Length: 189
Image 1 (tube, one colour):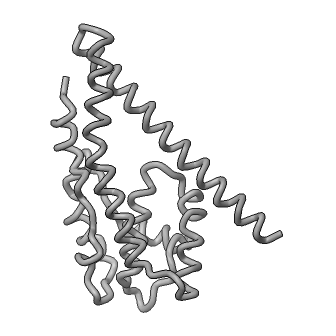
Image 2 (image 1 turned 45 degrees about the horizontal axis):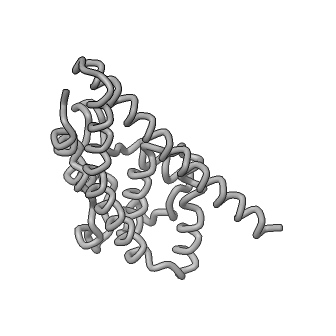
């Protein structure tokens, strides 16, 4: 059975686009895709999996997941928002991502959100989560080791345990999205 440390190496959890790594000049879509490929390329499961495509970016724009683009170029703010979408899309539906990002986009358009500070906090939280993840993995692995002797069954239990935790975290995020939407409706009344 593959162990926690090996899993962690394969996950490349430290992969992130830090605010200082985003160019101050606006980028064309192909340049945005190249930036994401260079930062997250090691995180894909196989070569067929794409980090970001033109279709994805166009769908995010059409779905109003981020502020409108200007002259077919993406600003530093757009790249930060696309990075946030990239992090959310593994766990949340596009509708939930839109609901989550609507307040952010509204605050950006009203110019009362320092997106750089918000984004730096996000990256910092992601880095802390990556550090805490190894401890959690080791804990799950130790629990599985107690349960059965057969290595294949241990691995299956480990998979099931991690999938269960993933579902719990996803459901907790969905509860928070629902609460965000509920609070938004209450404010309109």
